[in-house]
Length: 267
Image (cartoon, rainbow, N blue to C red):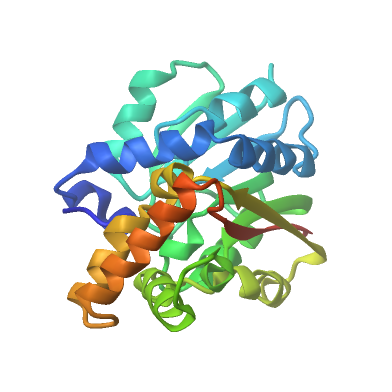
C-alpha cells in the first residue's frame, strides 16, 4: 500500500497513484491549505507579463491561478518529477500561457535569469538535497525576482494522545519517513545560502478538532499501524493510541495541530 510520507518520491512507480492524487485534492480543498496557497500567490507579487516557474505543479489548479494572474503576456511553467502527474495536468488545463515540463530537480531546461517568480509548495520535504533545488530556484530568477516556499516541519505535528511516549514515537516515525522531514526549520538558512535576500518566515498553524480531519490529511491510523510494524511501538500500544483518539473524538475533545513555514525571498 502506498504511504503518503514516501509515495510522492516515486509517483510514476506507485501502486496507488489514485491515493496520491486524492491526497493532493484533499489538501487543496482544505481551508487552511487554500489560505496558505492564496498567501503564497500574494507574496510572489505577480504582474501581467511575468514568467513564473511552479516547482512540483502536480495535476491541480495552482498553475491555472498563476497563469490568470500573469495574463495576458505572461507565462507559467509547471514542472513535476512525475510524468503521470504532468500528463494529468495537461489534460485538465489547456491554457495558452501555461506549459508543462517534467523535471527531477535539474532545471537545465530553464535558462539562467529568465523567471520573475518561482514557487514551491510541500515539495522539498520529499527531496534528499533541498539545497540544490533552492540553488536552482535562485539561478533561474531574474535579479529582483522572488521565491516563495511552503514546507512543514514534522516535529511540529502534534496530537493529544493518551501516552506521551507512544504518541511521540508514532509521530516521530511519520516525520522520519520523509526524505527531509525537518525542512521547515531549514528553509531560511537554505534560502540565504543560495543568495536570497529579504528572507522572511511566516509560520502558519492548522488546528484539528476531529479525528476525521486528521485522518484525511495525515492518515493517522495507517501511520500508527506502520509504526507498530516497524517496531517503534507495539501493536498493543498503537491500538491503545488509536482507541484513545477515537474516544476523544466521540466526546468532542480531539486535538491536533500542524505548523508549516511560508518563506519568501528576493534575488
